[in-house]
Length: 455
Image (cartoon, rainbow, N blue to C red):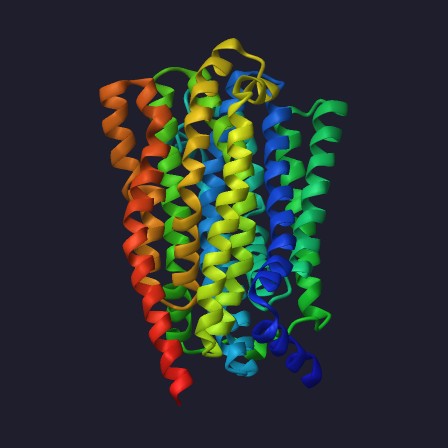
């Protein structure tokens, strides 16, 4: 085991940075793509029912963002700490944070299930459900809520694997669950005609299977950190540190859920067709964005591990590579998508009004992809190295602090057009704010690198 740990340390600190990021980022990208595709499979199959059912997918997407917000808080929080501790060769401390974050996620997921089911209808209305969307949203959401504990725990296991530099293991668990969900949607909805109930069952079962596969990676001792009751921390400070480090993820995902509520509410003024159109556009854009996000998540363990190992030049090189790679990938795909927006939207819901609204919204949203790579990479870098305050601030901009006032003002001034362009305006503003923070920290890394070389 010591030889394995040493080999992993050498891999994370000596492999050429671009090669290492791709090694870790490609499996994560595949995982993100499969996750996005199975979310889009729900959108596609549910869209065959009617427009109101399509809108329900967008409403429940906000609920999933809430569940993932807590999962990512514990997962990214513990993962960042674990990676830096492993970079400093402190395996015992890494196991303590892994076990503690897993337990916190399980308890939190259970509470979400209990209170979510208890207040299901008001929760769906809060998330933007109209009267006609509500029956579909309640049915779909009930199954998602039942799966909340395994979803939050899966987020923790997945992120610990990634931060340890074992992204391939994470990919196996996530992609298997994603593929099973796609098959389940087809089987239960197309063959057994279970409608939204089939989509909910398929999602819940696939999440459970994905969780078991991810957990197996730990119980079979394929990781450096361990999950065990004996490693659970009794120190509230450890839980506080996990939450503090993961706060940017909680804010990003939590505000994303709030933004989804506001988006659905403002779009709902123009009917179920507008809610359905924006839900489809968001799913398409997230599919494309997941490519850049996957590469960026390959950068996270590289930055955290090497920052802990005081190899600051590798953190800086990793940022530049990830940013440029994201611009090239997302920019190319965005341009391709702009060539056929109507066909893309129409694939999910063949409703002329949905296509009309969604086509313009998709073109505008795709334009925002050119501004996202720098903002996202900067946020990941700050969170990975423990700059929690900056990371929390930057993560909250795109997800809510900018988006919510922007959509409220623009929708009031421009109507539906304001709803459609709000995300792009938000991404431009977030980019402009992120630039000075990023430049300042990159210069700080240069100074730390020079100091280490002078010793």
